[in-house]
Image (tube, rainbow, N blue to C red; front, side, top):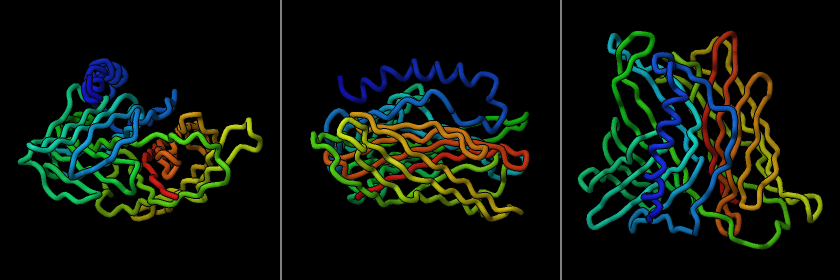
Length: 313
């Protein structure tokens, strides 16, 4: 059975579980991020060349996030709806002759497919297919981590108001660490941090200044040969435009890395709770993937943030 086939087999179970968890919440925006448990990401089973021109097939587990906005039919103004981590198996298949892109997400009952007629711009690091309201983007910031985003729209209601929910699902695929050598020295990774979220119901999306950066990210050896390697950093989130008092959230973490390179830590810091999780990636630890999902209360309002960092040494 192919990677995509195995992912499809698990979709029905995952979709049912998510549907049960969501019962009673379809009409209320702002579901809080999933806090526990925190499964760690699982990479592809072998090293894959993420070649956007030749094609490939990959799967991963517990590496998806979802962000939704809501547009009421009455005024058409986009509002932030919710953001969350989505656990389960994700899969991607890119084929040519003819061109076809297939994406499977844990919270969708069936995979999404794009035929050759939907293919747009393609480069060595970025592939765009479909339309703005129903499309996908694959991008490769470095070599060993692939980010796949899928955007869709569907009819929905919030607090009795009919409208459209726009959802962007993003999954991450990465190559495993295969080196048997112990980590001999501290590694520092550099890259870009992406963040989405805010206050559910907020209409400031078009002018919102929401940014994040990952500070002092280091992978360091354990103090003794028997100690686990550790990864530590602070994710700093800033939200300023349109807010009387600018919001700043810091997410510090320092956690051990498992034998396969994955890690996870629960966050409870200055009123914000959630998770930071991810994995070292690449045969010789060349890259790192970090995902985060936190929520808290600020001046009586629920605030939700999800995001990712992909770095290379």
